[in-house]
Length: 69
Image (cartoon, rainbow, N blue to C red; front, side, top):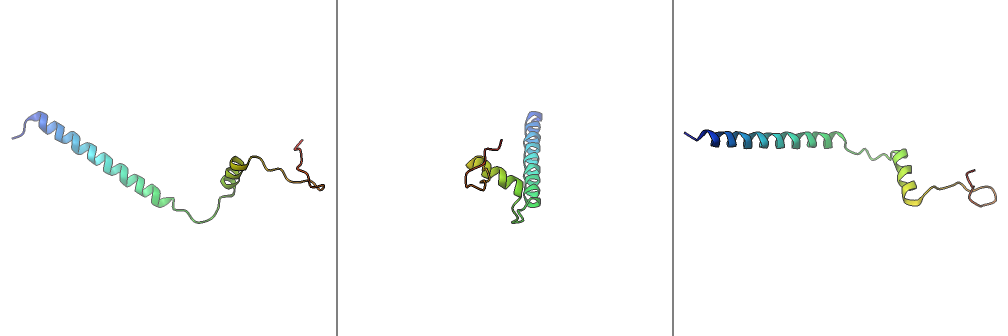
């Protein structure tokens, strides 16, 4: 028979392995449930554009950018 400390270490290893497997399954379910639909979400898209190019101000009738004030 194995020494009690050896059995304890084997049990700890098995428990850690089961936790890793459960975490991998949870992540796989999460990834599967959040599959992209192909549609663009307008708010995050605008936020990304703003972050990339800065605030874009609409042009006024004379062709210059509005001051926003």
